[in-house]
Amino acid sequence: MWRRATKSSLFLRLLKPSKHNASLSQSSTNGFPFHIHTHTHFQEKHGIFSKEVAPFITFVLGGPGSGKGTQCAKIVETFGFNHLSAGDLLRREMDSDSEYGSMILNTIREGNIVPSEVTVKLILREMESSDNHKFLIDGFPRSEENRIAFEKISGVEPHMVLFFDCPEEEMVKRLLSRNQGRIDDNIDTIKNRLKVFEALNLPVVEYYAKRGKLYRINAVGTADEIFEQVRPAFEACEVAK
Ligand code: UDP
Ligand code: MG
Image (cartoon, rainbow, N blue to C red; front, side):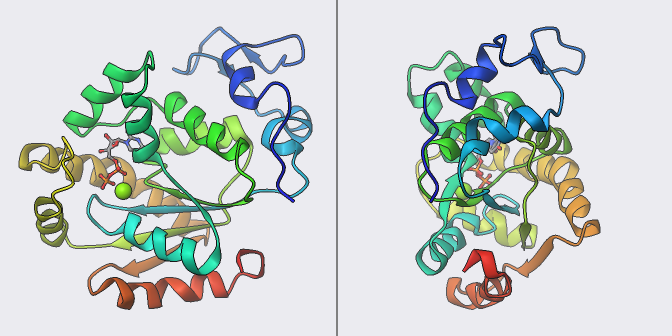
């Protein structure tokens, strides 16, 4: 069973390097606030790695408006995953009293990418507090830098990656008609989100395609039709069922 980690969480240890955590120091040589080494001995014994069952991770990628959230809801219903939307975690952090609030707001408003260490911390915090070991991580990693930061900090890789492939004009049409009151669903921000997606997120998609982990899904059609392409990816995987 996927138990909650006790005492100090991985999240807190990332913020406060301690004598038990020699792998993190505050000097920065790589653009992160901490100098991070991959240190599997430490990770195996602490944080999310102290759980009895290893996490099963699926990344869900696709451009803005490609239907990631809609399909994640169906995957949760059918296969019992815990759905972590990186965008939702950032919006929740922004609405709380967080020190990162205004930085996240400005970044989302412009359609750019929030610094990796902030997003990775939010994702790992959710993973640690979950009783479910099967995770759908939606809308992340958005760049090679995001991907590398997640792998370095967590020491784990996704088992599979779904990519919702959708033409730009269809994505724009969906975003402009969805009326969810989001500050970034306006034409100027949408244009930048699409640019950022192509320049920074597609290389991540290509990376996982090369590693044989990518399921490319044609994201045009009804939600039910698209789910019929998603279903076999999970059915083919014993642990995911
Ligand atoms: N975002 C981010 N890092 C992430 C996920 C989201 O910086 O890992 C920000 C980014 O500004 C993005 C916005 O949150 O444009 C909305 O992301 P979400 O996944 O909710 O929406 P999408 O654009 O994929 O429909
Ligand atoms: Mg979403």
